[in-house]
Structures are given as C-alpha cells and as structure tokens.
Image (cartoon, rainbow, N blue to C red; front, side, top):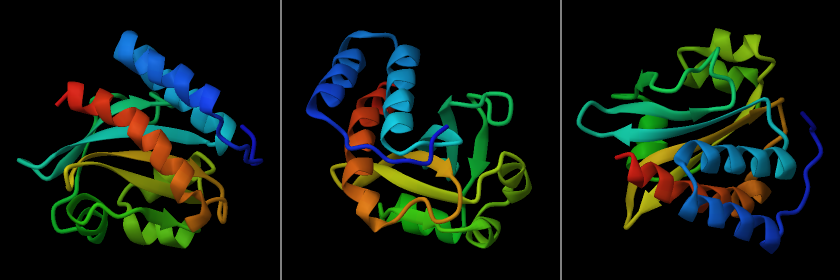
Length: 165
C-alpha cells in the first residue's frame, strides 16, 4: 500500500474497460481495485450494490474478504450517509477517524485495519444511485480534488454492479 497518488492514464482506463466488457466480474473488479491502488493507494476497497427494497448495501467486491466478505450487507435506513450518498448521489469523505466513528457503526473494525480516512463514490445511472465504490486509507488522504478521478473509477464499476442487480 502506498500513500502516494499517481495520475490516471487513458491506457489504464482502456485496459480496465476492456476487462469490464469481456472478463468475469471477479477479474474486472480486481482490475478496478488494482487501478485504484495505483492511482490513490488504499488499505481497503469495496464495491457495493444498493438494495433500495431493504435500504441496505450489499458487498459485491472487497479487497479484504476476511474483514469484509462478499455478500455482506449493511443497513442504511435512516442514516445521514444513506441520505447523502444513496438518496442524493453525492460523494462522502471521512477525513479522519472521528468522521468514520460518527458515520459507520462498524468503526472499530474499520479502525482495526488502520483506516482513518475514506471516500465513498456513488454509482449513479440516470439520477439513481445503484451502488457505491468505497476507497479507504489514512486520515487526510482524500479530498475534493480526488472527485474527478474517483468518478472515472466509479464509471468503470457501474456496469459490473448493474450486471449483478
């Protein structure tokens, strides 16, 4: 894991897009994970599908399946995070451990992984959030300047999440 950020390249985007179009979802998810690791560096990356019928998010991919296994669900009904990210389709940044503690019920598990900063990117199609891409690192690692690159990664994940709706 590196805390150094690198620019995203058209070649890297094209390579992942090709995998999204042709490979099994697990291979494509891993390619998105690898690209996010190169571009941002991360301690954890998860991709979640939004299940509006139960107001939950379901994990479709995790870079750490021991701590956050695929298939796990988190309730989001009545949460500020759910209203902001799932209902309004807006990015969410947890700048530090206090932000994470105030936002996520599983903050102790998150902290045990060394995570104290996070960016949650909604996967939005036609104004409707269908999932999220979540990239975690240390405090202060993410800021609004990361939104354009994060949006590209989210666009790569979107067809995968839709295919598992």
